[in-house]
Image 1: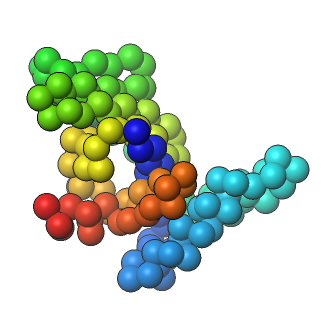
Image 2: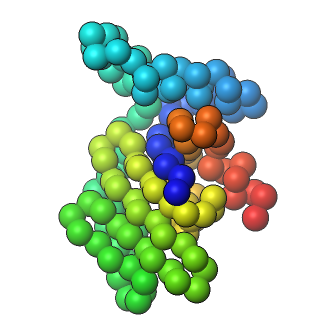
Image 3: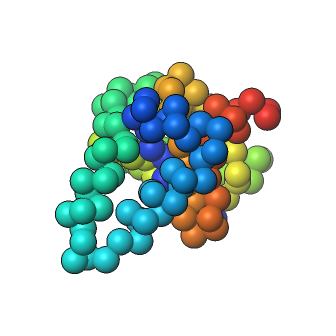
Length: 140
């Protein structure tokens, strides 16, 4: 099971790190692993880098797309797909500043629903994996 944190990066940071996302990942990883005593400093840095998502819009958009899908369930801000044929179990949790996506596959169905948004950056902090969504979708 992979856990992806999905962020909408502010334009100025996206332009600086588009071709070399390693530094962006390092900053987000620093924030993710910060000590509780420095949480205020981490929050300040986080809000400088990450733009607030249109969470309500994303929540409604995902629901409308999947509501008639037999493999889909929704509870509050949690969307889930359990497709036994594709062997995909994915859970998308919508927050105000990030999305949390847990999945058994590297390219969950929910990622296609985010392609209309710019500067979407995904991080898997446990596996030290990161990428821009547009680059991932170009490969398919």
